[in-house]
Length: 331
Ligand code: AVJ
Image 1 (cartoon, rainbow, N blue to C red):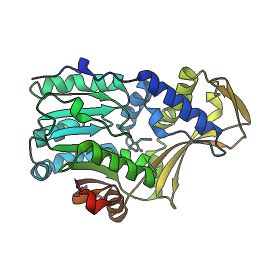
Image 2: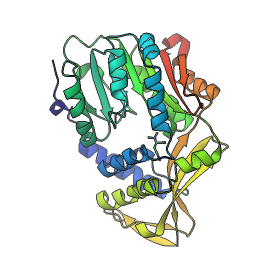
Image 3: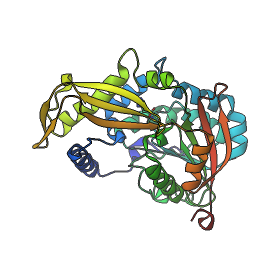
């Protein structure tokens, strides 16, 4: 039985827009201006990110695909077949087939905040896997999601496998990452597994180049957030006076992206006035990098016990399989 993408669970678009507005206004009101990275991904932002993944400098995507390809059999044995695969932030369908082929799931539930993009990503999968029920959900996966309500009848109690590739977890500060992992454990339930991609710490020049490419695609991606605010929140940010900056923060083991004011400026968003001094920044993204120890500490804190870790030959990226811990153990 194939499930059409038109079944896309109806989501409160207005609620999402209200949240965007609230988080931007709040973020711009802080002494250190910051906007959560998940707002990058409108249609244009999702397209630009796809372009980033093909850049020479941006190693994570192709490295992770390499691991999932080379280790497909091992991963298949470790996860078993017949699980419901729930993909968190399923922006693109490039990695998904690798897992769908390996794990022979009973259903596939991609969750993404951008419904338009999700619909486009599901269409080719429906053609390739006509027998697989595909149940896309447009939602903010930071909150627990009632998967049961979305699944075809009789499939509610199937064991689940969460798939969270791309090192998207790295966008969250450790505390928020742990909350997210716990919320995923709630969404997936007891007996579930999680296959998660995590980017590794490596020399500064490699990291900074990956987030500040020669062609300026990452700069365009960063600036699109300001453009989106102008488009959707009646903003007047001067785009030509904001510059992209990517810098490695060693203390927090993360790449930070900022939009730097090139001059003193004032602008409005939703009728509210904001000012920036020359050199002041809007902090738009953190991308945390991990070593074996910090990765395992994070997962355990989120209630997931690491079972296996697969890396590429150059130790640039890792894919970790973890098992939901019982409440007593993870309390
Ligand atoms: C999609 C969050 C994993 O942090 O590497 C790419 C986003 N930002 N270039 C990352 C991103 C700038 C990406 N994640």
